[in-house]
Length: 415
Ligand SMILES: Cc1cc2nc3c(=O)[nH]c(=O)nc-3n(C[C@H](O)[C@H](O)[C@H](O)COP(=O)(O)OP(=O)(O)OC[C@H]3O[C@@H](n4cnc5c(N)ncnc54)[C@H](O)[C@@H]3O)c2cc1C
Image 1 (cartoon, rainbow, N blue to C red):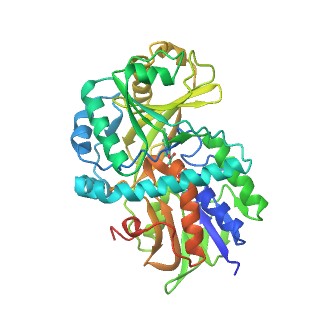
Image 2 (cartoon, rainbow, N blue to C red):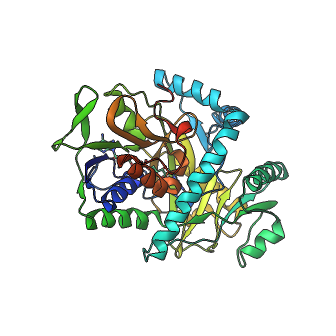
Image 3 (cartoon, rainbow, N blue to C red):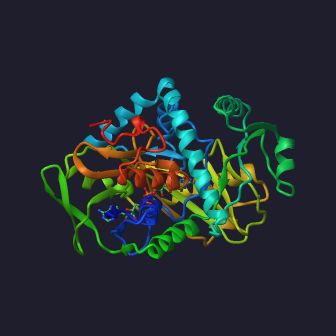
């Protein structure tokens, strides 16, 4: 039966959910507070990453974060400030950063990423021009110590059924002919791929509209009208919107609306930056991560995007040029043909990643309301997990079982 589905958030997650629900015959309205900025979804690195089996909350991350705090150009930073939410989030992050949690999370993340990858490939096969390139991802390591750690992760990935190849510098160079690389070694993850996130976002908007859905931009959701355990309407700056099912996909902004329903959704915004060079001196063909620098490198047609930094500094959307410099300075260390001066005059982009304390998304129903679904908290993996998130939420709207076990992902897990 066709339902009225109201989706809050026009980022890559909200759009994927909305387009999926509309393709199943539901009457979908998507609301976004901004004219058309699509949250943190346009300028990201566009990587689809089954290789990312280890959530952000992993052993060693707390110590590394503390070490990096003093460096204004470091890739990870928590701005010290008094906030109970931040303190609670930090405590939960610390609790989740243990090997047992990583072992539990890894197969779930693998299944989610692989299902999403298959969905992307289906869209591309059906003629959607997403710029999808299925040639893997290279983890480029400069130091033998870090390479050794990456080899261990690759071995875990292989045990979980992924295709990860350990390469010395010469073998890595043979995969990227004509590209100068100064590295100790690399891991090649064959299942990973990349696309142009803008094209994907636009394709979902078109799919939603073609299936009869409605996009309401420039309308901020402020509250709910609730009777008992049922949401009767969403209150927005453009008036009330009435639905049968509501999906909260507001990215890093989600906790405020969740709190109004009594749902505690611990999230911190993890700010990141990207810089896209339209005519780089060299263009690698395979997307890569500069491991020590935590910088993602993505070829987008003839252009090349560099993205990085995880700055936990509240809902602050200003650009911190020192951290952007940190990204740029790392590039020649791996690709000596580049220099920082190549990027003069290029405007950086920023986005706020919605980061849960255990590094896993919030997906599914919640006990606070019978007709609310939550789809947020994807942190560094929102683009990668967008299509499978759409599939899962659309199945739940139709009261079908989720294609993936959601136990670890419950929005009530910190309630
Ligand atoms: C530098 C960088 C590189 C990245 N690279 C990758 C990558 O390679 N692969 C990958 O998988 N992920 C990557 N990510 C992460 C990815 O971009 C995010 O996980 C993803 O964009 C989150 O999508 P979202 O839809 O949940 O949130 P957003 O894209 O932030 O969208 C949320 C939307 O909700 C709207 N909204 C919020 N509250 C309200 C309200 N009350 N009323 C109305 N509208 C509201 C906002 O306006 C916003 O448009 C990267 C992120 C960054 C910053």
